[in-house]
Amino acid sequence: MAKPLTIAVKRIHEPAGPGDGMRFLVDRLWPRGVSKEKAALAAWLKPLSPSDGLRKRYHGETADSDTAWDAFRLDYFAELDAGGEEAKAALFTLDAAAQAGPVTLLYAAKNQERNNAVALREWLAPR
Image (tube, rainbow, N blue to C red; front, top):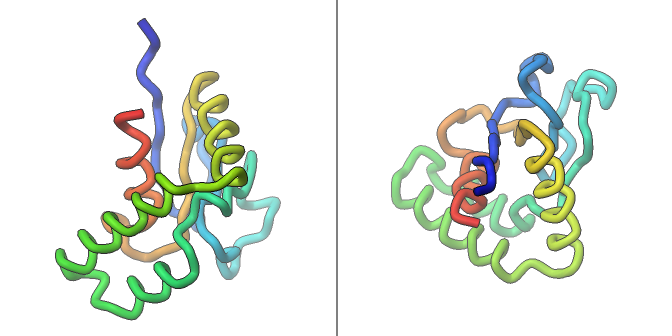
């Protein structure tokens, strides 16, 4: 039986910790005020981030609305399900890292409960 995957979610502005394992940025845009050295990334998995249109629409709506969050997740999951070759390669990288040890998905959003990294972890769970 395969061991359960350990996938954490953390805001990129928080310092890297020993329990983070391999750290992957899953935002489309590089976060302001964070140097690449400070980020301590294994990789920037841009193909697993929401499309620009989806990202802008979600942030343009009330991000704290349950309806907006549910709609974002459904649309984001559909984008992930339809992912092309770049998304498949990014998933392969993420899966390989998760099999080797803990993985942390990094995001820049201020909302800790509702962001694309939380949604991505949810989408990854049943895989």
